[in-house]
Length: 270
Image 1 (tube, rainbow, N blue to C red):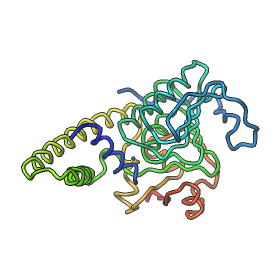
Image 2 (spheres, rainbow, N blue to C red; image 1 turned 45 degrees about the vertical axis):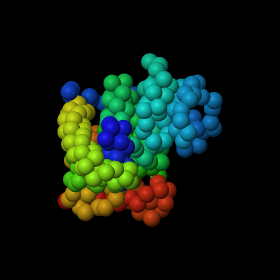
Image 3 (cartoon, rainbow, N blue to C red; image 1 turned 30 degrees about the vertical axis):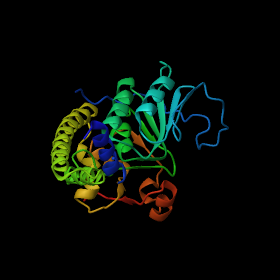
């Protein structure tokens, strides 16, 4: 089994649902770029990077915009579009992607010291690694940041092993070869998760956030899909400098799920 399938499998499991110290906020305001849902008219982009179908990466003034899944090509386009010292803000809309790529996106945001603005939705790996990495964080009216597990998600190894078993079974291999392939695949999954969990621990230590925020809704509150937290409850996990609409924690669940495209549940810490 190759690494590509492992990455794809992890992305399916998490996305179907996703060294340093924290930085203090600065006094600059978070600018919402022209064309965002704030009533201003769109303007031509300063830089638009070519990206795969369904993904947009462009710069407008001091803001770089990213819309779509988190992919390697998307990250390259984002880095290209945001390669300007005047860029201070990332506006993003994403349903997430594979966890290692998510951390690559997040580390780029953290290294650049960018503010993060959420338009419509930042889900799964976007919530885990990009939102948490922002210096200041703004959730636009009607948008949501929602989690659904991480590399430490209980049962993830078993789910990965089931996926690779199905993939290998579809290849119609002789019994002996099938058993060898299964053994190699399971060993690769263990190695991958061990490495990824170690890297994820380093990431959350670096950004100063408690990783359990990514799993608490599923582990403690029994949510089977995506969940979100109030601004005050996010702060309990070290996610600070967040601004959102006053009714952020009071959005209608059905309307929110319809707008985002996935069921999303609010959890309130007890």
